[in-house]
Image (cartoon, rainbow, N blue to C red; front, side):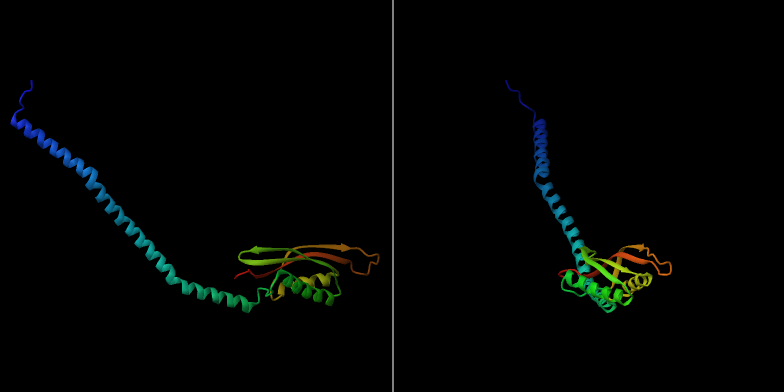
Length: 189
C-alpha cells in the first residue's frame, strides 16, 4: 500500500521539482539567448574595428595615388623606362643604339639576339645578347654607352676574349659577348 507522504515533505519535493524546472528552463532557453546576444555584441565590436581600419586605408588612398603618380613622373623624367609597344621594338632600339656606338669606336657588331622577356618587379625586362668585335676602345666605349644610356640599359653578363695577331705592334683584337637588359612598363600598367 501506499503510504501517505507528509505535507512538509510534499512541499519540499514540489519546491525541488519547481527549482529543477526553472534551472533546466534557464539552461536550455534563457542562457543560450544571453550568449547569442553577447556573441553578436562581440562580433559587432570586431566588425566596427575592422570598418574603422578599412576607412583609414581608404582615407590614405588619395595620398598613395598622388605619391605613385609623382614617382611615375620622376621615373619618366629620368628616362629610365623604354617606351615601346612591344619587346621586339625595345630590343630593336637597344640594337640600334649599340650598333652606332660600336661602329663609331672602330668595332663591328657580329650578332644580336633577343634572349628573353620576363616580368621583374612589376616591369617587363627585355634582354638582348650582343656579339661585338673590336679593340679595347670599343669595349670601353660600348660599356660607357650602356652605363649612360637613357632610357636605361643594364649589363647582365659580359665575356671578353682576346684574339692574338701575328704583329707585336698591333693591339690584340677583342671579342665581347654581352647581355644587355632594358625595362619597360608592364602590360596594363
